[in-house]
Length: 208
Image 1 (cartoon, rainbow, N blue to C red):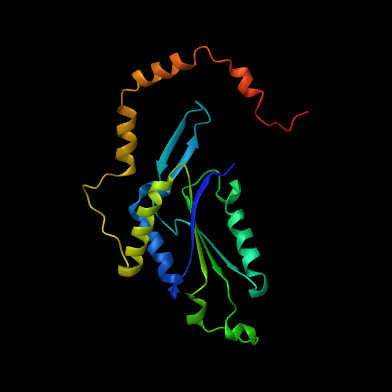
Image 2 (tube, helix red, strand yellow):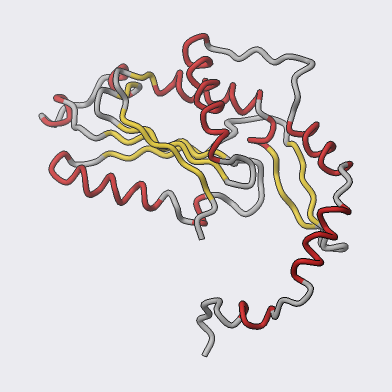
């Protein structure tokens, strides 16, 4: 099951990896939903959420290097692997994964030389960025806002946080206080005569 939402793009110009990581940290600092952990109480079996303090790098960072000769196939494989359900820990607040992919060998590496520090910190034209988020914290329509904040933080080095801005916590409190009795009654009436066993029997199983 694919539990993540991802966007991937080729870098159109040189990108500083250090600045990119700092920018993503700023986004996670602002968007508390991106550092919200999900838990199950062992006593009551109730699910609960907790907004974690941002004490270290609040995302998973991965770096890959691809051989030029097999770049296209290998890149496709990496993108497919980003769909794996185990790329995020089951618990914990890190809900974002930044995967940078170097698609081309640099001249220094081709000649067996040690690359300089500036080159190591940079993604160049044709390199790739894969940004993956858990789908319980983000949906497809939210990706645009994530990228807008990321670009802004990369350019300026920080993201302003308004004290009166609506947060994920505000949203969860609002939804908990909503009266859902009418919608619950509708769905109960709609499915009251449904034979659930017919649908359960169609679910794939590896049991003999």
